Image 1 (tube, rainbow, N blue to C red):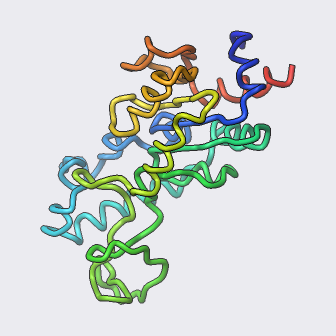
Image 2 (cartoon, one colour; image 1 turned 90 degrees about the vertical axis):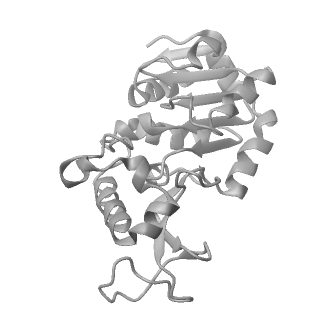
Length: 244
């Protein structure tokens, strides 16, 4: 696989690389995208109607069980060569900031550290009323389980429609945007805000932007480098090219 020489040189000399990943890289590991996951019993439900605070308030058991089903799907997935390549790239450069819209934890399983999770993590739970993370609780058979501190329902630690992104994660992603030497957007639709604005910020600051995606997106024509294909194929090849 051939890459532009200027791209290779920019990566080789970069002091700080930023990576934004979306559902596409997880799909390569077999994780269904948000809407693709609606099969069997759950096919009758609109995911946008389940992933809200209002839906949880109306039927907490239904929403908890839907996420338990999705969590089981995610637990069967393993990091793919794209995830592993990003973890390896982080070991080769002075600084790498990895920002993800995914909630599956596959980057961490691949060895990436300090991942900025914009939309939370489906494997974690938190208190519905007080919003604090809950690691363990007493299994009483009740669904959803209760917070051991205040007795409130527990909920998945993910961002629902109508909710703000985790303030610290978003602040870190935005405030470091001007310090990157190169910005990668991988497997994203480039339409979900506020993540979609991150590569735009990079472009406005004259930072080279690389898109890796098998499909074109609203961002493609603006990128300095648009690499069409799967992350699991392009990223390992890019690592090999950096060693030449």
